[in-house]
Image 1 (cartoon, one colour):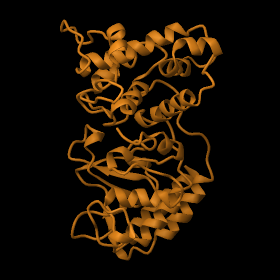
Image 2 (image 1 turned 90 degrees about the vertical axis):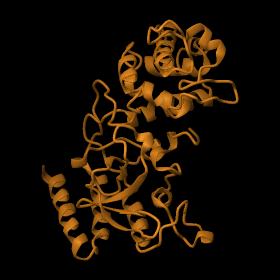
Image 3 (image 1 turned 135 degrees about the vertical axis):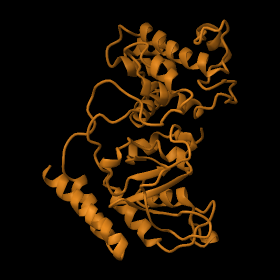
Image 4 (image 1 turned 120 degrees about the horizontal axis):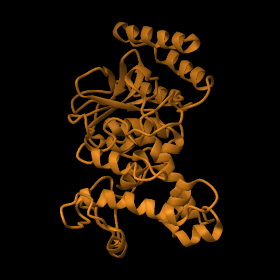
Length: 339
């Protein structure tokens, strides 16, 4: 309890100040830096569970089941691959002829596609077949490189990107920039799809993001606004959060539902100033998120709410509260530019 409890009491007290006068955010800025500079260890190990709503509800049971197919994968890792490949879009098609939610090319599908739902066919466009096939393919790759030294999951991911032969040849992740980046991206994204099993450390950049947003209080909302001079410095919700974190050197995606994947997800009782807080009419699907703000403590956020309103403080405890993300620099860097 100690310092963390004292800091939480300060943030709760700050929430009262919101109602009285809102002249409190700079105290939070100092507080975030103090917490970020103290404490130890992030999330612990153990079996991976999917974070709330991180996978669309229609696919969550399939990902949860097939993500445990072999020791080299887990549900959060499988979800990260699907998000990276297609953004969970079962109709996705790439210029390289990759197809479906798992982006199989026809030759790989012909060899590794399975009838995941047991309905008598193998349909690359059906997530009930494609998701199990992705898990099965991962596990096949892991078996090919099981005798290679190093981390079996990283070797499996490297095989997915560069082929099992390259992993065997180099006795581990090969020295290819693209492959090393793929392994790093998926293992980083995995943390965004996994429910935290322990403390999630605060970001040192959070305080600067709050300070940026505070300076924009009173600015009129603009749909599609990103704060450019041509737009009169106005923002929409995700434009504001993106600009706030950009001011401290972290590049977030443009839209709110992708910003949700920029780091791990603290629970409501674990929120710290600087966390992004999200809202949706569908609390089972992060892809349906429609609003985002920056948490400042005491149950309040700074957000750009809607046309006709200004950037302001709003309470977060509403029926459409979806969850939160503790933005990390590595998490933001891992996000695909298009999904």
